[in-house]
Image 1 (cartoon, rainbow, N blue to C red):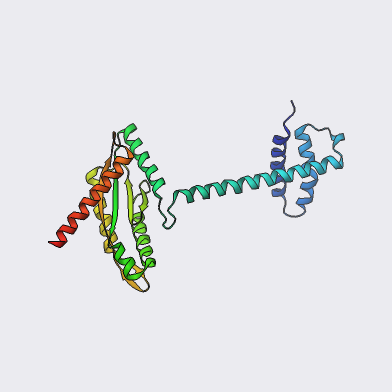
Image 2: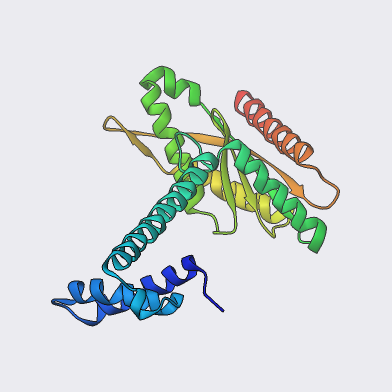
Length: 245
């Protein structure tokens, strides 16, 4: 049975690569001469038909196969890069809202299939507008970077962080109960507030209100997001009322 030409060229290329690796000097010329013969043998081309023109044609095909491999790897790398860009926020090194909602869906699916509940935490920054108004939008961007970096640094690899829009962030805490999530959310809020960020030579601070909602069987994505947002807003109002009193 005769081997298909493309498969033969792949094998031939591997043979050529091995030949080049086996000797350091003068090997390229030897490989160029032997590779067409190796390919011809693999493809079942009789020795007496291996004319100079056939050898040149085989070498040309080898080059095309090698170039196709390189082009394919470049395209795969570009696809991976574009997929990463499509999932991440345009400003911060965290997920964008679309990708974060997908992570919420995954956590809910995990809860549904394996009874392994997780939790959603919703963060909203307090005083973000004041920072923008007092120090400029660059300071606001620095505040957002500070929050994103703080959340990421204090979470597990299995957790997810996303920017939901403006100065709102979301966190999915996998395999976490509501009480554990509330404890963790409080710790994260303390880390945000107690760590200064720098802008134009100044040390600035910002704090965040948070709300938690369980990701468990029977909950859908939209409801979970809305409930976590509502819990955050209620806590924010409580803090305002306490501060005013």
